[in-house]
Amino acid sequence: MTIDWQHFTPLAALAGGVLIGIAAAMFLLLNGRIAGISGVLGGLLRPLRGDVAWRGSFVLGLVGAPLVYLLFAALPRPQIDAGYGTLILAGLLVGVGTRYGSGCTSGHGVCGISRLSPRSLVATLAFMGTGFATVFVTRHLLGA
Image (tube, rainbow, N blue to C red; front, side, top):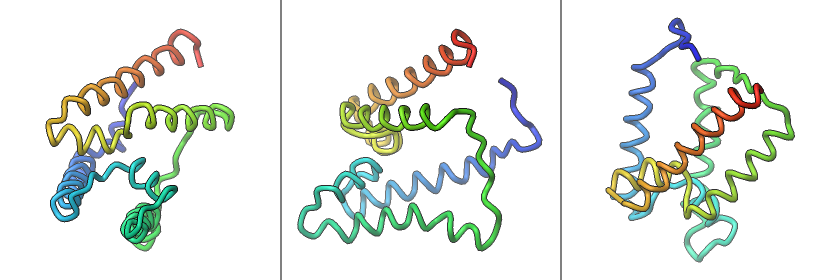
């Protein structure tokens, strides 16, 4: 793996991380809720009374933010080196993993670790370890 130094943007990445951290902290402080995407979205599938508006607004913001960004700049073009079957399988595995792990990377990795949750630390280490192992196996052992 090599770093494309011409497109390496540590300051923009740092600013994005700070904004995510501030948003997650504000969400917890102002609403008493964790900004975990799987939990927010899952709550829309089985809504409780009074929950639909804020959950819908949250998801609308996630979808709408790139559209607002388009007013000022072009979105980067993603390069995905996998077929549709692999992407579908990966999506299903992520969905199953978030159910078994009681949350996703945003809930555990951003919000849980910042609250010093031992469960979130273990979950995040499991997410990262599984990701590292998957990349190693697919790139180095299977040669994909």
